[in-house]
Length: 128
Image (cartoon, rainbow, N blue to C red; front, side):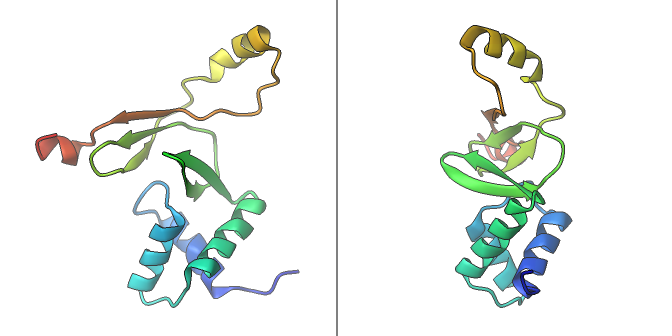
């Protein structure tokens, strides 16, 4: 059994508390350091990997970069082209298409990812 980890506990707490929808390893590290919790990037990576391996955290790939959020019901996302903010979409827009994809390709679908792009309200107000 792995020993307790203050960094892992802090990462799990930060993900649960929110403040943003999905976090990169770098963002998690910066937030921990800014809040006075000593952590190095490799410890944050190990903490996220541990939580992901146990199904507590989900990985979302955005622009080739892994981001992490609390695991839960599947949902897709919208990303702001201005500031990079990521927001969840209600429900799943593609779920009803999976039988058609299976029938048309022969693939057994195990998952998907859909990310809309746009501008968040703050970036739109800034002239975007």
